[in-house]
Amino acid sequence: MKKILFVINTLGRGGAENALIQLIKKLDKDEYDISLYVILGQGELIDKVPENVRILNDGFDSSSVLSREGKKKMKKHIFGMFFKNASLLKNLLYILSNAVGMIFKGRVLIDKLLWKTLSDASPVFDEKYDLAVSFLEGASAYYVRDYVNADKKAAFIHVNYIEAGYTRKLDKEVYKSFDRIFTVSEDVKISFLNVYPECGEKTSVFENIIDREYVLDKSEEEGGFDDEFDGKRILTIARLTAQKATDISVESMKILAKNGENVRWYVLGDGDLRKRIKKLIDKYGLKDKFILLGVKDNPFTYLKQCDIYVHATKFEGKSMAIREAQILGKPIIVSDCNSNIELVKDNEDALVSGLNPSDISEKITSLLHDESLCEKLGLNAANRFAESDESIKELLSLI
Image 1 (cartoon, rainbow, N blue to C red):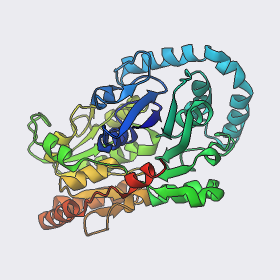
Image 2: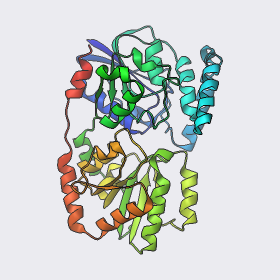
Image 3: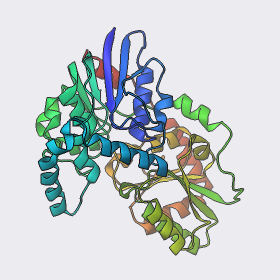
Image 4: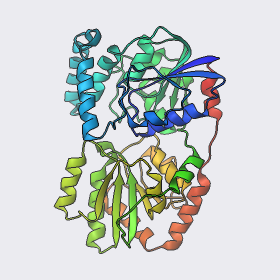
């Protein structure tokens, strides 16, 4: 039986984390002995990990990484890790050097400065693996390179490498050490190879795996909207972070409300910008128009019940939410970043919008008043979804 280790930073309710669980489910448990190590040992998706997977963490916190209580626990845990293996002291010059570079660029990314420290503070396991997989950028990549004994090593990249703020200096050229590198989209691949051109021959696209039947089944469960609103419902599923540009969505809702459209816009997700978004909602008097629902155990009931799905973001790796909306046959509006438009065809199965309130609100208005267009986009979206196991075969070919 071949032994595979997967390493990821957290198991919060994110696209990469969900994709990892779906990938693991695809692997034959009689053929592969699978282990999982989570750098920060926290996340609500731990209960979704298949029973045959060995969790290497000594204790695991199943609280949300986005909830207020979960954030407190994570900060406390991170602070404790600073003093393990003298990791903070060992990385102090590294942190300061990269922080200066970030300050010079006007964009300080605290989490990325600390991933190396958290990797160095993690326990080392004696076991040898046939394949070790870093499933996310940052700590998991550093850990697999530096502390895992494996015949082959693979790394996944889920974000636009440059837009997310990574550099060769920051990650100490970690990807040169991997046997294979998988990016979740062509746009992510291009961005990555602009930084690591010498990795071209060992880099390929591995799209996130989504269980179509699971999405359809979960969408039929009880739950979803309970406010008895009789107008059209717009839905966005996204973390409340700068990348997801929720502030622009609020501005778009302001225009729709001013024009008298009978709509409500709901957002499933949480994040560091929740307070800022809430203030913007209150400023524009949209308390009953733009509603932050937080994180829900089953987002698919909401997705099935909404009238329009909007995914207007600054950049993406490859959005699982868009693909889930496609599975459920929703009329979709996406912003024109490259990874979004890889997933759709404008005016065939979605509408592509510029990332500005005027264009987004105009696209929404066109759908609100054209039922035949909504029906066309929804039907084409549902027919577009396709799955392939070829990327999994490429991963497993390493062993």
